[in-house]
Amino acid sequence: MNMIRRAILSLVAAASVLVAAPSYSLGAYQHEEPDSQQRPPGDDPVRELNLSPEQREQVRAIREQLQAERAAINQRLRETNRALEEALDADSPDESLVEQRLRDVAVAQGAAMRMRVLSEVRIRRVLTPEQLNTLRTLRQNARSLKRERQRDNMEMRRQERVDRQRGQPNRRNGLGPLFPRRGGQQERIRP
Image 1 (spheres, helix red, strand yellow):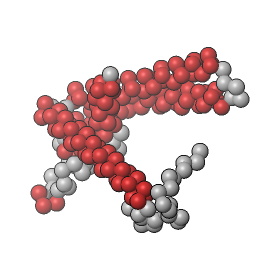
Image 2 (tube, helix red, strand yellow):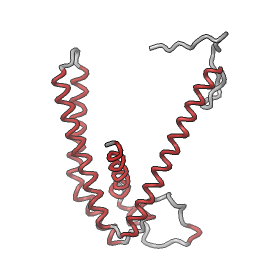
Image 3 (cartoon, helix red, strand yellow):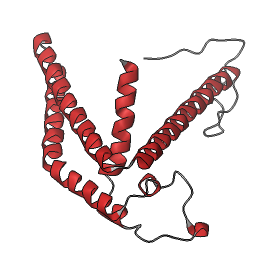
Image 4 (cartoon, one colour):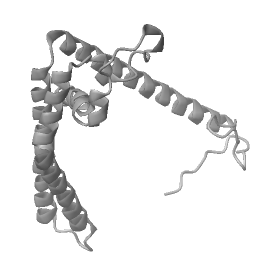
């Protein structure tokens, strides 16, 4: 299930690049620049897809068709989240009310996901097989980059924990602890 969710989210990410791209960015690259002036790969995914003017217009039309529905779905999602927060913030939260609010949020999130996926499907119909392959490659590169960043962040946090335990300055600000521990005292975590 988690894999399916990741796959859908990656589709959504690519769709959002195409769907949420400002109109001018889809139409701004009608002329070709010399190779020496081109942006590095991965800098502009829309440009790397090399959309034709007709495709740009079709993507724009898809965005415009779905704009009102997307706005209504997003408004509903905000309202259901707000209602859930209110139910949770009550002095003595009613469990059945919280359950109902959770179901409402889940339905709204499902509608938002459905809208993003349908947008993706409609946009994919506009793309050529070569563009679809480019899109897949861009997604794979983005996933790899994200995994790499997560690994780097995890390693940095692990190293900072080790440094704290040793009383060494951290990598973020270069400051050591104000009151270094003495003689193997354990650091207390306060709630």
